[in-house]
Image (cartoon, rainbow, N blue to C red; front, side, top):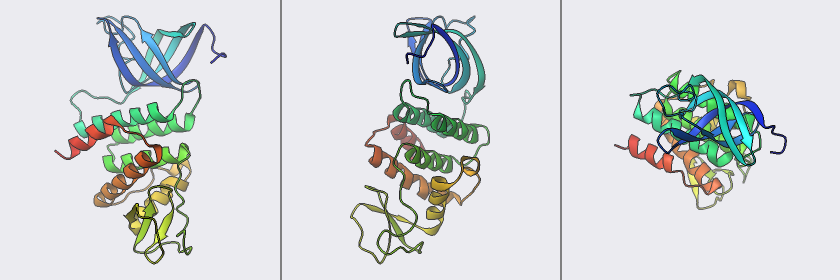
Length: 252
């Protein structure tokens, strides 16, 4: 990040926070220009601090940051929007935290990734502000994250015979290939019905402006959520602790 000046301004989402001492915070930001960035917010936990609200988890803010060698300190911070509500739905809070962990795993330090940032911010908006069905927003976020990270499935047609769709189709979790019921397929596949396949194609191929512009029945959204979860975790070989917590919440 040699292009950074001694002091610079950027916008970013707080995707992780940790208390340091009695009054300071160490925050992880997903920023527009610099990707993932960790910075100290001195006195952010004090009652009178103007940095407190802006450096809280799930808050998108404008930051003026002071750089000294490899250390970053937040000089000024102004909140733009918050996606966290005290006393909010535990499922929504757990899923929002999971989206932050996705950002931590798939964005890089010092490397802009505006498409992923836009995805995370929009998913948080539709989840928290628009109150869209959580499993559907989860599925959209997981599959589009996979696409942006180089794990896009091949959903054009059956890999064996070229059939576009059928009542029974299967997705290979190991390589993202699609198979109909009549063609030989790998062992590690999941069943994908017409509704889920249509939704997956939309999420994979649509322009971003139309990404969230569809609805499916809640039971189909739940099925789709399980498929995208299995696909992303296997493709990325990542273990997401916030996902484990989310699943424990919805299975209570």
